[in-house]
Image (spheres, rainbow, N blue to C red):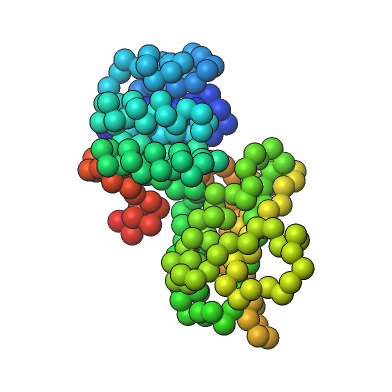
Length: 250
């Protein structure tokens, strides 16, 4: 039985995770971390990592980038695995995550949907087959409350394409230029509106033909399910960085 410490347990995603774990027999939540103490959740909720007094196997983190340093310190001190699902991390914070992975197993993905993971793999194949003869454009759409843009998932998709096209680079701000599109650009565009859960498409535009791969999320529950699967997967692993690619191919 995998013992989970759920960071951000009182938030929207945290509650999705809690509901999903209730229905499973391979894991349980033994404690939560949140500034709100909701006794109805059925497990103790601590205000910070320095207060945690229960044994845990893995942290599932759907909280805030501001809590990252405390979480990493706790994980390294207690040899606890991490499933990092918080978005909007800076380059410096990602570097600190990679450093922590030298001591503990860290599962890091910008998106925990199995469908998006498949989209990444398909995008790699498309980039490999179509090569430099097709222009690549990525469009993502999310609800009007999302803080970061472009989405981490859009970056993840772009990085998947770049694995096959090493000379490619991201172009976020084309409107500020007055020049033709460079062949090595990967255009990334963001839409924010309404209650859109998450829409991502990768377009390969060639001469006289277009190939478009897309994914549409209809509920945030799919991200919670993926994070729980990742927690069970990583709980007994040795130190290192893990991603959805390892999970879907396991």
